[in-house]
Image 1 (spheres, rainbow, N blue to C red):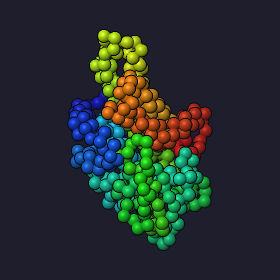
Image 2: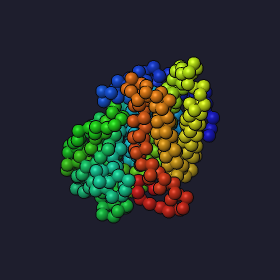
Image 3: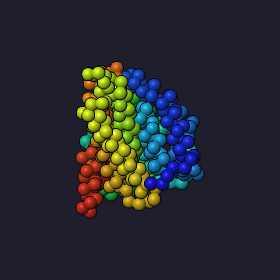
Image 4: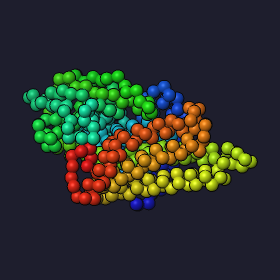
Length: 384
């Protein structure tokens, strides 16, 4: 992993200070009320943080992916929904800017990388999740447009996004019949189901997106017809690293709360952190977090070098999100009864950690990706 430059360290210091002073005080109440913090994302845009890993000629900052992921981690450490929003926006933006025809790319790039437009990624459907190639939303060519019908599910930013990266079927072939379209949010025929009522991440809007004879210009095709599944899976390789960074930030936050409690809470005449049962638990938490961070940074370094990183991205997502779940559960245990009540944040962190084991491909799918990489088998299921 390449050492950070002085400018990159200054960037991370700025993000850490901003996140602690601006995001952290908002997290609990916004999550409790289910408020989507679009104003905070606009602030990230004004700080040039919404286009970090994209080329400067497209309005981005040209930062290595590892630096971008460290920023995501810092944001998620303060307010997971904000870090997750940046990760999802980057996922959708990458798909458009990497595969859009030049006229479309040049028209939309700067508004995406500046954070003026917020993106969403639409792959899953009510009956199609891990088996990505079984999607049924259909786009039929009609002159200079595609007519789209179907329903997408579990779409982060649905109803809030300004554009959607849509994966849809343009042919009957299971894998070579999937294409990708850029869909502006104001496309006639787009509608949204009520928000999902979730266990956690309530500030992050999740809805179904419905397409009812929605006409999408043929010029909005990303790549060529039939290339959509490959685009989707390549996007997920990078998106999973964003989720890994979110998980590390969340786990780091939980550890900090647990350490503070272990220092300040006294039983039998001394801080509970002095007891080996608690101290060793904290040590294991810190070790897993450090290992998860190193894993996602190594995967990012491989990505930046242009090396194969699919299996390592899956490993990073798998290990980091399992770590977040384990660390938050242990943080609740360290706080005891205080950990179980909503007056303290660790119960919320535990509920949020669960979602990270599911999004961008369940952790069972990550194990499938890794095992098939080891065995040399290919597959069209959710990132394998």
